[in-house]
Image (tube, rainbow, N blue to C red; front, side, top):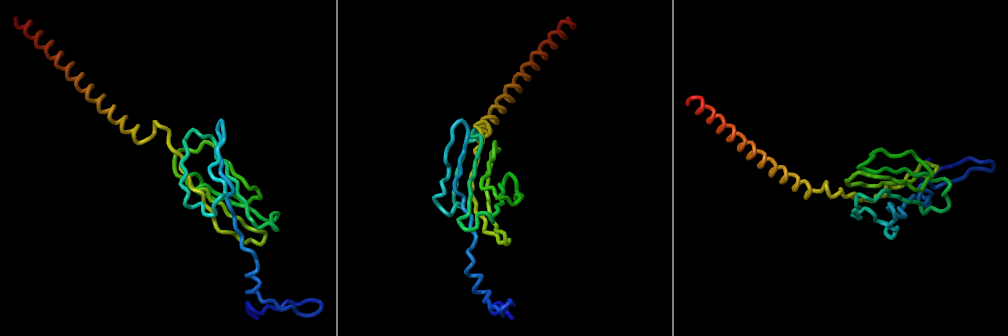
Length: 187
């Protein structure tokens, strides 16, 4: 009849369902980032899942770390076999991945920049959770920092200055040589 009065026919009669009340009893889906690790010759734990709000994290990672590993899961324990996850790394790949039961993702050798790892979960009924975000920044190598570019610019200016004076000196020497040749010719 309406969302509060749904009648379902059965062998022994009708069943009355208050669908609005039923929807409130369905547990909401949630996904959590459990941990974030970085690997190179050694490993380091960046985030250990100690906070449910990962949007305010401002992690900076040196460029020489080779791999980032994300673990995520949903705390809806009775339905783990029916859950699928999708993720994306904004700043690297802006498209969502295919839905999969896999609960981890690894990225290797990311270029310098700002990134936001996002993950969401859905159940077998098609219900999706909200998106959980972990933000981080890969720092550039020293030779790509703003200070290095300033030094490059200054070295370029010094090189142009010396090149200009070298050319000017060369021009004056050629001019003197030409004047001497002209004097000898006139003599």
